[in-house]
Length: 326
Ligand code: ADP
Image (cartoon, rainbow, N blue to C red):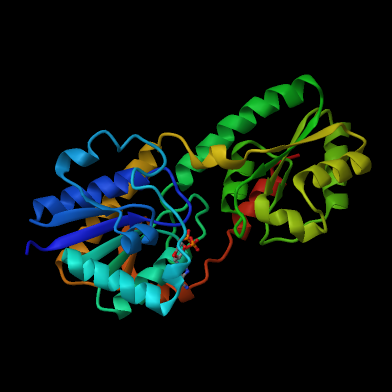
């Protein structure tokens, strides 16, 4: 039987996943492997939604957002029986190595599958950049650029009406998108889950700037920051800021638009580099590794070690952003 490599995307989708799938498929094909595209994450593995990917099957996808392999969450795979069944399916297909593109949850699944004898390599695919063992995750750059483009549009209308615009961006557990996007749009306030904030202080900052001829304001809120100041929603934050500052304030939730769209150059390049690297690892006999970026270079680390790491928030950049917006 020809040796085979499988590839799947799992958890939330992210622009650039297709570039990674393409790189995995092509790098494996040139090394003599048969490649299987497994659809809808671990579900496809368990349900047999598996198709061979030939070189032309990954043509015309590098520039497309989303994932051509589809993605899903799979409850069954979180059980030992589910993982055993997944390993059996791999063996039936002759899959000796699997590339899993997703987040920490997907890597846990990959680790469990390694425990059943299937060699797995994880690639970080999530817009939130919330994977500790890597400086960068596939999709992050595209999501941030989409958010910046949207907020630039909101700024035009906030400016025309002398308003304050509260904009919620993605990041349930991490404020990376909010921090960078907030800095890039010159937000007067950036609310992230990692750093406590006080709406009273923010409104005082807004009023002080208004007294100094600033007429419109952007406040960027990470999804996960909403709960940290006893607020229930971004609308609630806008309402409270309006009460405190007296400035007309509107809330906008950017939502899922941030997950879509053509991947940026950075996402295409890094996804391709990581996909290629994953195949090199499998080809060299490696297993249970996550591919990441460290000091700007692609590297790999044991999945368990990677999962145990903590990524410190960039408080210095946060302070700089705060200090220069007034
Ligand atoms: P992400 O990979 O983006 O973190 P999830 O946490 O939803 O997304 O995980 C994606 C899938 O990975 C889950 O639906 C499940 O099939 C699998 N998974 C998650 N956690 C575990 C776990 N602890 N053990 C085995 N598989 C897991």
